[in-house]
Length: 223
Ligand SMILES: *Cc1c(COP(=O)(O)O)cnc(C)c1O
Image (tube, rainbow, N blue to C red):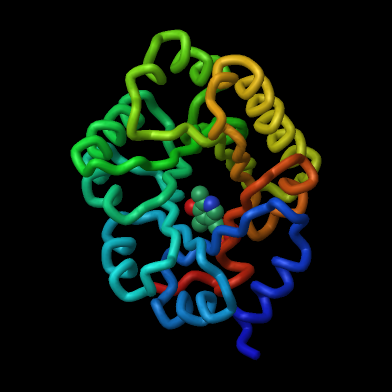
């Protein structure tokens, strides 16, 4: 058995029912994605528009592509034809641009609102209050080709597991208050995307329903 197949098997076995696995394949060659596919993996996460556009035609049609990286509004047009879900919606402007392009394509796309919970300034995302404002300002009422399916969060890059846990807990709390508040009329709002190779176990304990795992499956990133 190859290393990728083995890693996917181990991760699957460690995830509770109802937690989806996104195999983060950025910077890995198509041959590696193929091995994951042959091991039964169907959801793949990419973070660059160009790389996504090259990999999609090289992989079978039943792959579900998720865009997980920071997305600039001028790249929306390139990414949208390929993706089922965008995890990294971090501004109202980006949300409206996705709506515009999805309408143009006659397609519905799923998105997650990226929450800023980490200590690092460098990470992108909405605060809980920003998310509430999307609803109260009527932005959500103006989108009909985008389904807001939940939230995504990244914890601070640290060895301090208490800090990581606290940040994931805040993200899950925000999700729950949005679900019972601003998003209560939205039946699609049910996903919490959090947890990467080094912190996914903590994320799952704190309520993650979708983990995004790269290096633990594919090894260190290439090129
Ligand atoms: C790269 C990346 C991941 C996967 O990171 P690993 O540490 O390799 O598991 C998950 N989420 C996002 C947003 C990423 O950019």
